[in-house]
Length: 131
Image (cartoon, rainbow, N blue to C red; front, top):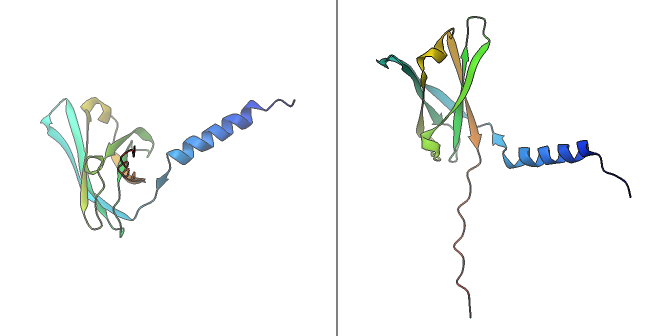
């Protein structure tokens, strides 16, 4: 009996995980950025919105990359858009990310990207058991 290579099994398992957690590139507009530094000196917030330019509902999150003066990433985080609920074509979904102000030391800029995730289909109601 041949012994299977553990690397092949590992690659297969990684492919399954990737397939289950895939994301899509959606046509969106991102804007309305506001960095709130005044409400509480210990916490800062970045907020903005994502407009759905697709012809179908989308669901997703934004990744926010905090950059230093050299353009290097200091920190990267994710924030749900529209409270992790789908939003229709033409609608705007808001996002907000709050963090300690100390995380902004050395941060000169930030980039925001939208990541679309698959909308789970609702389950059909089960039919009653016939007896």
